Image (cartoon, rainbow, N blue to C red; front, side, top):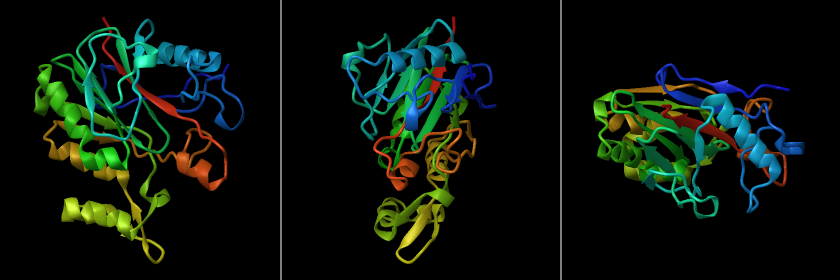
Length: 255
């Protein structure tokens, strides 16, 4: 059996966590093998087994908590597991409760894991461009502070996401960021006429650093360019595939 691919962050050393790739699961076809995407209610046996393997690889015995992600700037505080059919519509989770394993699904968007190790407060955020621009990482930090975290003690790690070389956007897209903050032009570089290349990872890191946290680590892994290791929405679209897989990023407090 192929082991689950768990990518670790030095910044989060000492906290149970992992950015998982696509290896080590039971899904088949274009979405093989550790596809964590939810398409059915109740979940399919394949998804249940993939979830079991993901939990076992990062924090055995924990209870997985995920969201109905909507590309928002909403962060929720988690005190107990959600009923699977009643997951909140939001894009970040925060908790101070041991035994809960926070999970964020991505397929090119930016997964961010946060921790204040001294306070025992953790967070996980899904930052697509809409959520990043709207402030989902700021909302995550604010929610952590409400549970007793201190801003300067919070560390964050940014996992696999689409890189600048793979992320072409048009000039109109780039203009949205310039209106919000003219300084963001440094995250765009010239592309073919009418287009630019966007460094979403660096933009998210900028937002997190601007929030005043203690440290931000970027892993620099491009989901689009590594099909053997990661799922990618944009790659699947370019290939004309009917659907795409999702990988999961996890963080938890262990008793």
